[in-house]
Length: 248
Image (tube, rainbow, N blue to C red):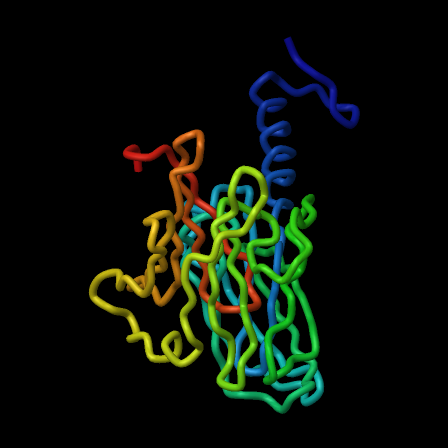
């Protein structure tokens, strides 16, 4: 049995090769830049690569100061999962500079651009296909409970304040960490550092060897635990890991 393609007869094997080529093109098209948060000395971004992120060694990253047409960062990131936030640092640029991020995997390129500020952090782009669940100032706007993580502006920067959210929607204060204490955390500690914990044991903040914040909360009424992990504070939507208590 054979098939006709552009006036030519091809066998079953040939047809399978054609279909495989079409599928490969479809898969390779699925590179998405889900978020990008700019300051004048760093960019934090999250992306998804549906062609299996474990199948390639790294993504090429370039950051350009559009105003001066100068490439201020060139390097790569090693993937550790889809939609994970990465941060690249570069020499501090003048406030208000227009910066562009280019991310390349294989032959595919996605980009984002914004004017940077050294006074604070821009809100990341919305994750694809979703909308914020909470509209207050918490950083976990897309996963509102069972804790709310707030940045509170002070003269020294931003304090990190955590509230437990009860099943009735009420907020119960758990703990606060000053901007100074956050800035004093050691770089790449040998083991996770317990920074603060609520008096009822419901949530705790850890500083990880990866230089990331991790807030562990729970269990909730269903026995579920929650890990909120983020690199920048504020300015980054945490990624969330959930699991049943005792089954991590």
